[in-house]
Image (cartoon, rainbow, N blue to C red; front, side):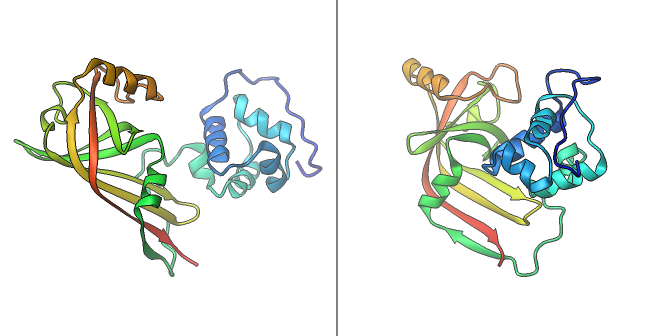
Length: 226
């Protein structure tokens, strides 16, 4: 790639992309970068970035390191060797501080959908359950099993938490909302949430019961450093 004119070849590559390509594309989009911008950062041709994202490929170590640097990531993260490890294993910045976030920023970070955690308390004790959620009005909604731990929590106060850790930049944030959780029993309301949902629950199975959380208080903090 030294001459910046690398042109991909389809020889030996299978169509449909790869886990590496999907991670590269997801990270690039999260940073708001075009393929051309990533290519310029790592000294490649835009067609090669497209090739990595769209075709099964195995770039060399040097290419992977340059690509990781361009995406503010690491070779391990792009190649998937850290997928089963908890986030936050990198060294913390020496000048890191926790900065409180106002409600407007908290709601912006919640965005429209993603994965969060619902903390509740039942007869067996405390439970924290990850859920796919969407923002619906001023609250959050998620689908669960009508026989699950969250279903029996209807009418009680729960905590809902979302966070993000950027290993490469050693930054992160978390948002915590506390409020009452309710089951959605009205058919039209459930259908509106079905239309709003971006995907089926990742956990699979029969998870058709919609529940909503109406925050009574919401707060967040961000890790930052100079």
